Figure 1 (cartoon, rainbow, N blue to C red):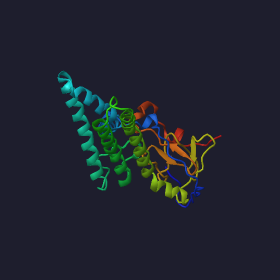
Figure 2: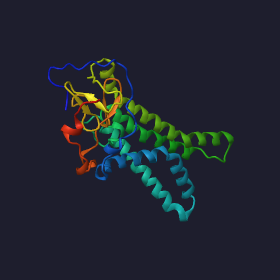
Figure 3: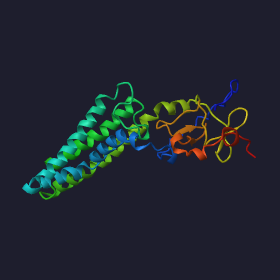
Figure 4: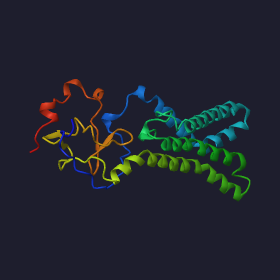
Length: 251
């Protein structure tokens, strides 16, 4: 459902708001769609806590009975690093590549590159800290070890924020320049005006509306509104009837 032909949609006011980080419950993907997302997020988790990973690896390597555990942790870190390199190298290819669809971090090359760096840089920093500094040798070495121990989490978070900012760069430019379509909403944001009558925002969204990078929200002209749930999330017996519930007058 969309605005009728010949009806001019009011332009937005140029006010910019970042898309929400949350995912509406009705738009959470099924498990089979989570495989690529889980791969990327697991690699991000390993890189964020690489200080802990490498510290455990170093401590385990000195003990013969725990050396297999150290090899296992090193293998996981190596796989995560290889994944990050692959993400950076394929960031400019067409399509969305290896980056998970989480938060729309795969929508453009800049977002994909920063997500790859969120995996590569923390692993490098964590590895340098564990290899060259020991907490027991001196006060200076202990301080540097602590810095390198916690730095990967900070760097990973910063790179993810930059990736998120790059993901909505084009959308922000469209909204700020007042080019994005704008729609009249009811005071409770449950309904939008399609040019002739009111439509339920929980049942259908304007096809011309600007979507957020993660594909979960659409721009009303002043704020973000959650897109309707996926069809497989709506039971058959509770699916809205277009004439009765999706469209109607608001009293």
